[in-house]
Length: 259
Image (cartoon, rainbow, N blue to C red; front, side):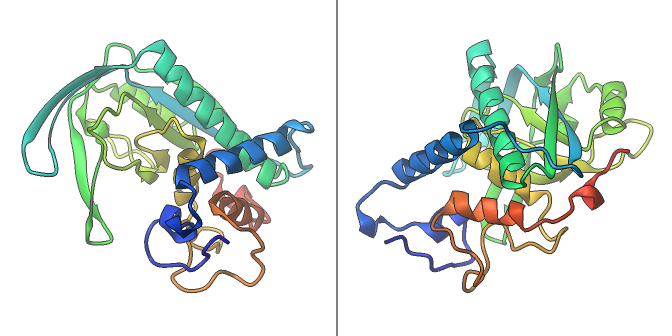
């Protein structure tokens, strides 16, 4: 039996313990397969009052990063995003956004344009602390060189959300779902929904996507409530929880940022 006791830690640990003798990864793979089968049994639903959020997925092929490991030793890491690696990220994101449409009963549709930031290199990361004890390293838009300010302005004026796909290697220690304000030399741009370090795992894509809407529609926290599960939650696992959060939103139009 799955342990459904919640703590204030990550959803991943909230739903699972090792006492049942199965690896958490295996359970999650089964859940995603079940979701995929459900979604493939019929066309994705489209509601009469469907809301479309437009996302830009920004591709950065090159990284040249310097960061400390857990012992404080400086690591210099250079990576290049291959087409095969990028395809895995695209597939994971599309599956995750199809799942969002499925669980919303067609009330929310995510349209994504993949835009390559040609000739750019990510040269630095932003460090932060989550809940006062988890050290996080994310992509820093200020450290994309050369910085495409004009393109950043166009993207901000066109899209509701922005996600960054880049070769994470060991540099990024978190994914950074929430909001971003793209930098610009002469003006302050509007903030947009964002994932700073896209994942090639659909489960993580859904999780980070939902962080942008935490509290906006009166939903429970993505990582789960601090105490007991809601009485009207009848699922057993993490994927069920994300589905529950999405289904609980009756109208997604207040979250639309671009007309």
